[in-house]
Length: 284
Figure (cartoon, rainbow, N blue to C red):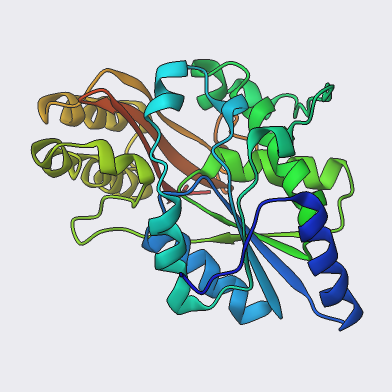
């Protein structure tokens, strides 16, 4: 036994949350698709530092996958996930099946206009509709006061923030820094699918992003710097490259001097699609 209470039904979860609310407890939620790593655990620790009760959700959401093969290959490691959470003593692991989340007759889709069509949205049409819909459902099911998301999925974070603001949902979205391995690679469940050689080559991603960010912050013109970064990734054996762009950190539109910016990348490596981002301070 893992020691982590595993809940599969929405009714059981609602009863537990009702007890917590009767105690006056604050609730934090960490939505995940499983295959947990230290990045997820950092979110759990942040939630435990601010909330009385913490729920981790584990649901591989079929509606945010454009490629059925990618959905089929996504790691599913419930037993290992429960074991890795056990030392943290989370209050509940919510593991619904697809029918629990999307019961027969479910017809509503949450769409966040504008930001969902850029970058990831352009390469994965409908992806953010699936993300926004499942996050809205999970926030409603958990009745969380705070929800914790990593900055590695930067565009997803902005989509969720926009949705919560637009729908006036009574939950605070808490962003937590990306967790990286010693070589700078952002921790990701997809890293498990990389061969040892590919995993070594993945270090070129944070190296190229960091070098580009420093050059732009030093006053270099962005586009030549971005071209150099793209070439660096190609030379390291990565590709195809979906995008490597400098964007406004919040709107993901073209960056504006004096505003927070973000350098974002999506690149393929041996059939695995990896994303990453770093902040860039533009000269005003």
